[in-house]
Image 1 (tube, helix red, strand yellow):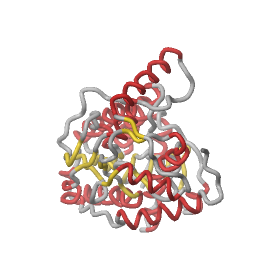
Image 2: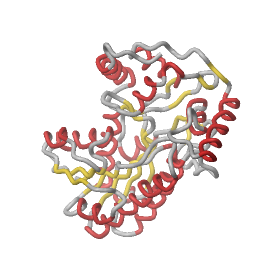
Image 3: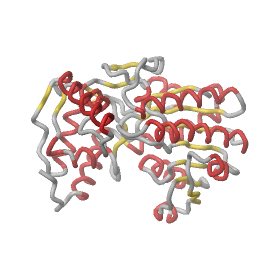
Image 4: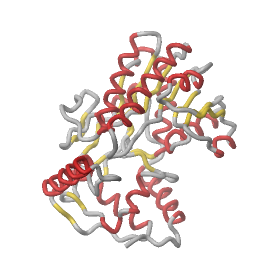
Length: 333
């Protein structure tokens, strides 16, 4: 089994589950991870944008879990395109050349988020006419490349886990906590979203590979992967802040002024080539002010996916980890 991005948050969770069930596992990442070495994982270092590196990693592999990606809300389009699109095409080409029969691709619901509310939609929802982030656009393009790849002997499944969280997260939760002192609620705070606990997301990937083996007719299909019930986004953010010792978000602004402000910031960053990312982007405004939750009926039916760790159980694990991680640390104010 090959996991690209095996040293990342989701990638490592997939690797751990594969190792625990007795599979031989290889990780492909940009750097060496001692924790993977301790699990007996074979590690290949390389660049997903380099076909030769990917070809070497795919030798003698039965399943590729392609998790590696460039995420985030700001940056040059070429960086996102080269990693998310060219990198995915490299994985597809390497699988074909090496004769790897199965590919499970980690995508995102961001590929179809259109700036408005998405409530209970299924996989038939179309790609938006206009994307509000390079990440969303390039993940949509990569999805389409994986779907096209099913025309040959390669069998594929595309998963769209949404807002992955849990202990050990080095991106989403720390970002919320680090911005606690200047966070402003956008909208009325009643927007609901879907999320998924990291171990449940990893389970879905293993299930996808198993079901693809049992039923090749699933090849090319796309599945939303989430917890059972949507949650109030801002209530969840307040729980995270509370666990870290920070105060809940009390300041609020309507969505449209926030969107106008974000547009202005993006304009100045583009024109004056300012370093770093804007204080807020249009994509973030949409994410924080709209509802985005999905119908996971297809994943239940075709993959047998059922979240084994409930929202409440996962939240307990997360809050315990946050409390330990930020115990004694001063949160900027």
